[in-house]
Length: 124
Image 1 (tube, rainbow, N blue to C red):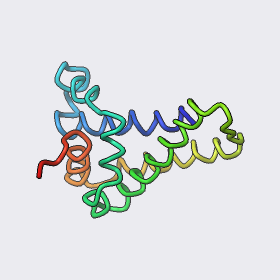
Image 2: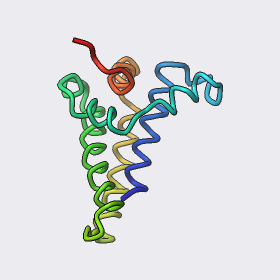
Image 3: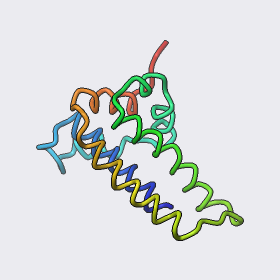
């Protein structure tokens, strides 16, 4: 479960750095700073937000799976009584691959909007 979740998490961190810094600057200090700025809790809040629900399906599917897998990863890592069947985990890995492929096809402006939701807490 951790592998599937972290594949999404690192895909999200890469998206944030690519969209808010520059894909061509991968490895540069600014790009790395943005990549490393993604916070697990804030990412989940953004994935659950009303703003995310208004984004295209590729991003909504990513957000929904992110929330689901984060919960499952917490259970897998911290609940000694949690049980996960191999077939379920394999299905989640396949789902993760498919969602990441679709997420990468989303419009760059929409991906940038999502990245800003993940990195920046809204002010009221």
